[in-house]
Image 1 (cartoon, rainbow, N blue to C red):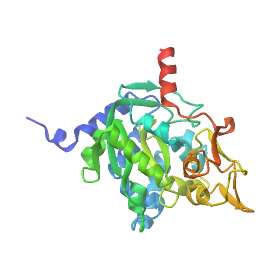
Image 2: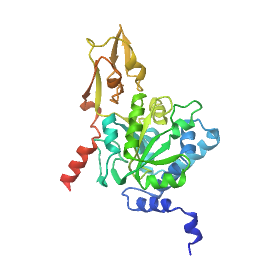
Image 3: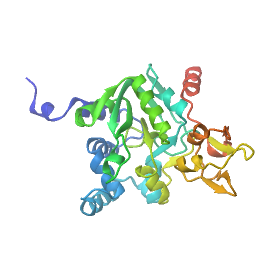
Length: 313
């Protein structure tokens, strides 16, 4: 006989809790935060972006709960720094994004401080990585006039996939690696940026690839407002003025507003460039090149990281 308690608590919720118990530096507060975030993502993101109709009512409640439950070590860091350390996206060029959705074996790569330069949420631990869902983007869904299509957030591996499928069945669907790559390619052609997202409340690890536009994405919004939620890919684009015809297409597609037209030529603000690579493919004259930039951090190259982890083990 199934107990009433087991009937009320879904299997994926219990699995998420079990994973939290064996995750280093993961508190009960983190579990509650992760549960709320994954259980009601549209409410969570809608309030965070200020778009939800209940924002005025719920935001003070969220802030109050956060003030009570946030560990003192994080409070001392300051609100913006603490939030950035808990939730952030690493820009990944299209080919690296595709590599992330084609992993077949389970992997454990911990403490990626050089790649993911934050105090927490810097592990890649992928269980059943071939299980992928396309989720209606909470950021786009919260906007009055969103970009389409909506189902472009890719959640990868368990326990996250099972949790979302059980709790958001009408807004998520299982897809193959091939379908995931097709979504990534279509979003790349729309000029959107691929972010590998990490979050402390999501077991301190990588859990999703989001395909982001500056007009809808809550992370872009927070970044513009001074909360450094995004980190660069490790690359910077460079324009050859001899090949540039000044068409302005690269400027039109740049989500980071890093390209300006000056005297009929495109110029890149290297400080503003996050190395997404969209402008490289949009230029029909091959005037844009993509270069490694040590000042922009280390790229998230999953195949290289997997080989290094295998050598260490």
